[in-house]
Length: 613
Image (cartoon, rainbow, N blue to C red; front, side, top):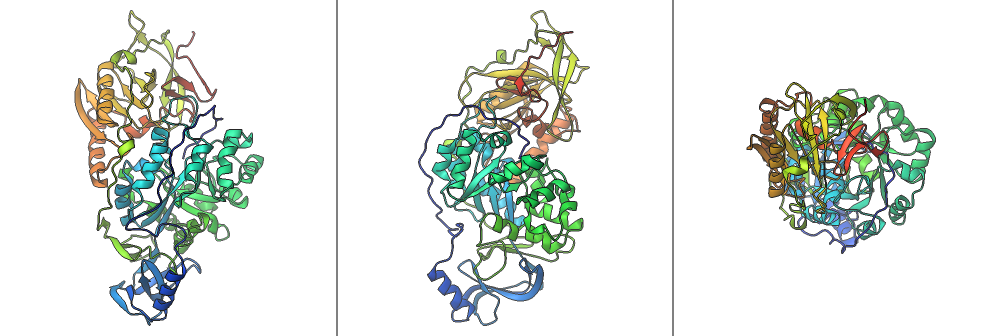
């Protein structure tokens, strides 16, 4: 997800009861679906002895095994594909009219929280775009709510049509330099890794910990080793001996590849490489020259972090697939990467292809040569979406223990005090187009009490991070340049990776009002000017997600973006909310702010704001 170079500090653990297994309307999410009763049913259906539930007639089936297509009918019973023969009778017939029948897409790595949507609403959002399975890492909500977050994600994704498999987050917290909501070690991993929908250990961002076989890191890896489960990687720019060491540790995927040469080396050393097409991080075009017929079986597609507006305007996994096809990748090779390859990588042998015995998760599209547009999407043989619209809403799960998650102690406007101790100071410089920041310098004004004074002719604002998980009362301030806002404040409870409250503004009154608003509503994004609320997007689930629909979330955020640009004059070179939420991430160079203070990522240490002339 993000480039992290650190060694974790001492961690503590707590225990919780095991989550319940799958139940409900979509019971075949487990990897093992075959038994003698099911096999007998499929055999009899294939041989025409009994009537099947549904037949898709006149389809052009995309065969990801042979990398070809063939014309056929497809028979479905009990949510599984029985075969292609012409003998079986059907209770229901659907005429494909010569359209392509394509296996449902599998997102090999995503953070559902980045969509701002609950799992049920996320299901409704991505299924119409052809995604029928996701491998999700609940890293964000677990950094807020710990095992309560893991439990919620499992419960909330049990009875929805989208198949949601989870990887247990490997790096909670991401660093010891801020207060996160939880600390999860091997003991906690052991409580959940045997769950039928937990496929292994999430992205191992702690490369130094692996390379030095840090005991805490190795204990986490052992939980996956002992169950023969997957371990996802996160290793940008590491090659040669360092890559050898990392892959030798049994880590088999990477979504942070940066160059075609890096892709080829990582494939050569046994890794699966994900072509990522998210909102901020998009590397499909960048990596495509490294993909060829010889290594394409090791290529997957993922979205990682995808904002709701991007899902609406560009799509989900299908966006990455279409970009690849439109830029020269063979269509069936691209489709195979988004289906069969992912199923093999994660041991999901019940899906990823249209073949007898597999799940009837597929969709119809008119063409594949210039891209794929899902027109009818089926899960377990039942049509769930048509013409880009979901047909039935997924059932909602009450957030219970993860609602709100606000424990802010003794907050007041005084907490935003900023006395740098010098007129010459360090400034966080925003660099448009990414989440890396510069380490800048500036001369500022101070009043008679040493407080920073905002100057209208300088694009320098105050940044504040307020701890919200444990009632520590922590609050830290710094100065930031390049945001462009004038006369107001913005605050959000999305602040990677620990997700404390982060606020930016040119005056303490509006900043304090914005922070109080988030505390009151349990999290979200809000904007104020002169004490007046300009717009608020409530995220009642851990301060990260909401049960509003994709359309409602998109409409709200579109209006808030317009207000941020037109009324608060935020620079149009940046996203006002996404940029802000990464200013507290102390593993991305160069300067960041946590609830513990200003952090120099290059030196990997806290730093003073004041400079000596």
